[in-house]
Image (cartoon, rainbow, N blue to C red; front, top):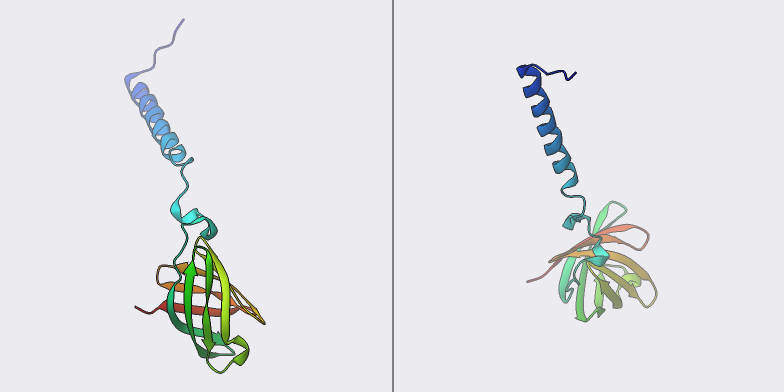
Length: 137
């Protein structure tokens, strides 16, 4: 013996199935797609860091000016850096670019890793000092 549902129960059941189907599609539709924001900076297209970069580093509550002039051949980077009043952080720099990540060092000090987004370079160098630079046009 088969039991038949009333018209209201049948409509409710169909709506429930339709909503569950839509919800399932919405939740699983993007599972195989990697959003660009989730791609690690090291795997992004190689940044171009050639040019003159100016900005500041914050240390002990004061802002110190920085100027870097960089040239890039493939992933290899070379140039000069001047950090106002700090001879230890002034001189020739060498490094490399992997994706949006720039790793730089002086002869005496490894500066660290900076993230490059078009004409902006940010990150932390030597002992966690925050750096913000912009490329001069």
